[in-house]
Each structure stands twice: as C-alpha cells, then as structure tokens.
Amino acid sequence: MRKLLAICTVLSLAIACSGGYSFTGGDIGDAKTFGVKNFPNYADLVNPNLSQEVTEGLRQIFLNQTRLKLVDLQPDMEFEGSITGYTIVPISAQANETSAQNKLTVTVNVIFTNHLDAEKSYDQTFSRFRDFNADVPFSDVEETLVREIVEELCEDILNKAIVNW
Image (cartoon, rainbow, N blue to C red; front, side, top):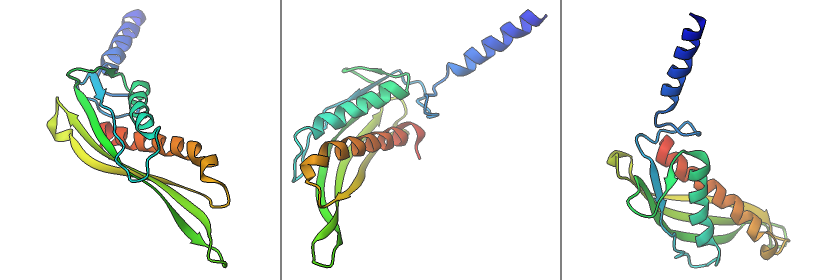
C-alpha cells in the first residue's frame, strides 16, 4: 500500500510539474520555443557592443530561466525591437557648478509576439539606468554599467512576457 501511495504521489508531482510554468514562476502556456531577433542600435550615442549584449542577454535569460528552446524559424514566442536610447546626463551639481554624479540610461523598445496567445503580446519601451561618479572616466565604468543595465532590462522583458507584471 505504501509503495502504491508513493508511486501515485510521484506521478502526481510529475504531471503537475510538467505544465507551462518556468523556473521564474511565470506562465509560458503551451510554448516550447522562442526566438530573439537582433536588436539594432538606433540611439544617438552608440555603444558598439550594446546591440549584441541586449540580443544575447535576452536569449540567455530565457534559456537559463525557462524550459523554452531557442529557434530561428517559427518560434512560439518571438522578441524583436531596437535600442532607442543611450544617454549620459549629469544628475547632481557641486558648488563649483560641476557634476558630482552622472546617470547612464539605456532604453529599448521591445515587440513581443506570442504566437500561441496573442493577448499576451506587447509593444513596450523598457528603460534602466545606473548612476556613477563624475570624477571617474566613463570609459573606466562603462562596461560594468552596461552589463548591469542589460541584465535588468532582460529581467524586465522576461517578466513582462511570462509573468505579466
């Protein structure tokens, strides 16, 4: 009897866990595949690596946090868009009218198409920023700031697509 109960419990868990949920707690429905097209950079100020970082970051977060497979043709969920902003602005002035802090902001427009559930599709702009000390040359901190911002942007895009916050 105990063996039968144990087998039923394991089977129930296996069936319950095989649904359309990802590791993030999001609902991917019946989707099995996703695709990410290249995100071209149309910002006035261009970081030459940003297009690849956003595109690859989005691919990696879905591979790491969902059971979806990356495909090039006819994905169930598809992401495309562009980088529309890459700005550096001063945010706090000192007594001598120089800036103590600057802000790097990256803005990305995303078109998400859920081919299995059109109501979950969206066209939205996402933006994230990081402050940095104005005394430090931007070239010394740019790579780290961009990596952190891209990671947050990809998390936002994932959450909007499958958690729908």
